[in-house]
Image (cartoon, rainbow, N blue to C red; front, side):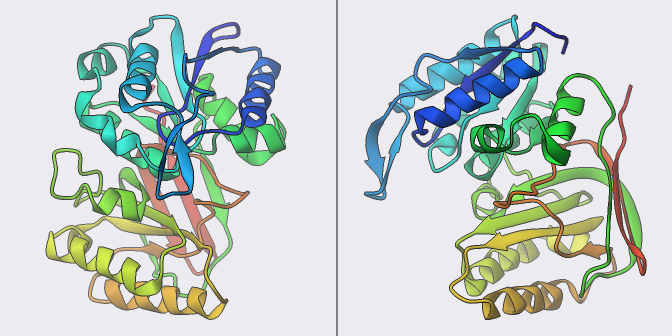
Length: 302
């Protein structure tokens, strides 16, 4: 996209603190883009889990997202936050418009369900930070720089990282898909499954115990997905009760993938962390895990 083109801000799930939307608007303007707020992106409606509100009714959130997908002026869509609610929308999205006029959809966490929907339509999308990051970090730094580069037609990611304990060496080139494991594992038995055999899979999660993550991985094993991956990128699993859970999580994942031969990279900076490197869903990607470190290259097709 070019300077002056429109970026839609939508809130497809949880309600968003207004100051974070305002901060995202300022950051997008600093990039020379034209932020346009959807009708209900600052809304608040009801509750889920007795804790957090939706940004609007299901119909309002669906209407906002379909508006952004259909508008010829909008060239990218920033999802303001996750929470819960995106899965309610994916069966009613305008898939004809998605396929006819592809545009970047940006977000993570619960937005993983929308990445699954975009992939279902044959369109790439961008797993990347949302309004909170743009508010707190603005246009500066590595993460924001990669978001800007990707959406404005610049270079695609080429990440080099130090070695990590538990890595399994090897090289693979395949389509990269993934995101929040809890959200995506629930979609495995549906037409919107994003955890596909033959792909390089990346996973992350927040607030999940080790046994729950193990259960999700067993689902992937029993579905024939885990044994047939081209590679695995293990992102950040955050919000443990104590540090021991981090060690236990690494050991559990290593045991789950021990029977297979593909490369595995632990501690990749993707997930609910400040250094959350953008990854392009559906892009052909090379994952090279060596004794000297990890390199992940996303290949631009044009």
